[in-house]
Amino acid sequence: MIACLERFVPENDIESKAAVEASIMCKTLDLQGSIDRTASADNDFGGLYSRRPLAVIRPSGADDVARVIKAASLSSTLTVAARGNGHSINGQAMVDRGLLINMRPTENNHFKEVKINGSTYVDVSGGALWEDVLKRCIEEYGLAPRSWTDYLSLTVGGTLSNAGVSGQAFRYGPQTANVAELEVVTGRGEVVVCSEKKNCELFFSVLGGLGQFGIITRARVLVQSAPDMVRWIRVVYTEFDEFTRDAEFLVTRQGDGESFDYVEGFVFVNSDDPVNGWPSVPLDPDHGFDPAHLPRNADSVLYCLELGLHYNNSDHPSTVDTVVKRLLGWLRFIKKLKFQVDLSYVDFLLRVKRAEEHAKANGIWDSPHPWLNMFVAKSDIAEFDEAIFKKILKDGVGGPMLIYPLLRSKWDNRTSVMTPKEDVFYLVALLRFSPTGSNGAEVEKMVSQNRQIVDYCVQNGFDYKLYLPHYQTEEQWKEHFGGKWERFVERKACYDPMAILAPGQKIFERIRNISCNP
Ligand code: FAD
Image 1: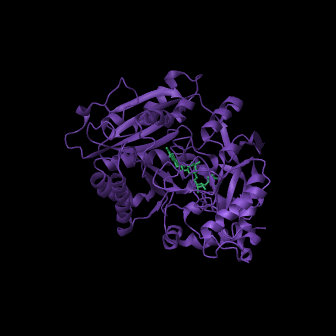
Image 2: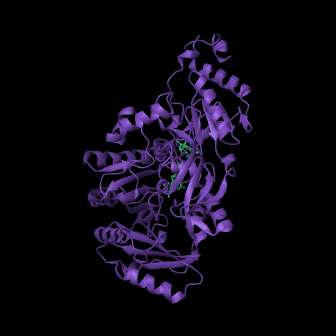
Image 3: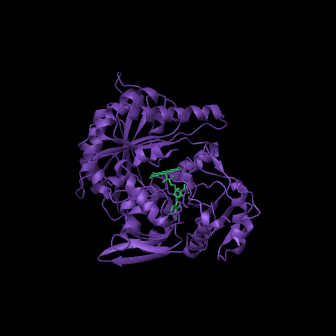
């Protein structure tokens, strides 16, 4: 039927052809879910791009997703993008005149505790938000996943398509290292269950695979007993080498009780700037930052190590104090610049949600966010600090500048995620918030500063990788994947041979289905 209709569409008019194909397809698809063909332009958290899909599909489950992909593969040019919660920065979840599958309606399709060989897992939907996974796991089982992101209004499928990192990753690896099984709808429209033992090539392709090989409809996530409470601590450094020494010391101590349960860090400006400076450090409004404790020779930027120790209500308070005292005793921070609060484990994990509410009230949550996320090898991080934090970013980015070490040994090399080669590398996240009413030129200035930073890394031969990568050309993607590019291309040819999926990543061009041409 599609082929028949194409006879009446001008050969060169790909756009209208796609629209016609989508229209016919939508009418003939027999979905349990729904289709909206009047969808307006889609945008994402980055706010830098906007694309208009031809239709937005709200699937009821994997079968609907499979039907949509199969139908798209029969068309000449249609592409399909899964949208998690649209928290990408550079349009990665968008589709230009293709089909957008909104995964959120599938959020409750799966939720079940599974015990295998002494380990406990919870099966969750690819469209579920991590914050809901957290609440349900705790309420129903007293359990929680081990590895998180800082912010939890992200979907399971969205973070597993990247990596998913936070302050627990030094111990447990990224979220991609904490799943045992996936249900995936491939670019061939097949629903496949995969794991390390079963269809393992697909399993590892999809993890960190930028949505290129399949759409995750279910994930089996490793869980453990959830603590009741967290002691959340921030300590301040003036010297970068002391900050990194202590951070690396903590992340390499893997034994029980040998380190904190959460280790992150950030750079802040040595000034009273309310967003970028001293006021961004305290955790409790009653305990302000007293700059009199800083040495006179402190530089333009300072460093904060952010730590968390889990405990239970049944633990004696003095036990927690003793452990914290012992662990902090090894560190070289400015002793009078220590901040701490005790809060429930759930409140700790939802800490960015509170920042979101604040930012929404200020209007900066909805303005553009030209964020830059990278992994930088340990051997290059001191120069990164000298050239980038202390100079290019000495006035801050209008939001957090995260920096914390991760261990490559905790990342599975078989996944599609790319990291630097060294054993220790740093996550660097420049989480820029543009002030309300910023104009295009101001946002472009931030984007070009990001480019300047990446160029610096390239020119100085840094061992680095973009996290949540965003490139425009095949050459750039080849460079990103380096020696793993061929494997990535082979996996694509195997699982999504027509290059239907995740066109917003701009890695592969849709292969035209010539059998559709009359
Ligand atoms: P989307 O943006 O909707 O999609 C991202 C990509 O995944 C797209 O290519 C899309 O097509 C694909 N995709 C979506 N769902 C599926 C699926 N079910 N199956 C296959 N592919 C799919 N990341 C971290 O690692 N750690 C953090 O601490 C962290 N904090 C963040 C805080 C904020 C405020 C924001 C905005 C982002 C943060 N991120 C963090 C980045 C985040 O992990 C990624 O942007 C992630 O892709 C967003 O998830 P999403 O569900 O919104 O995905």
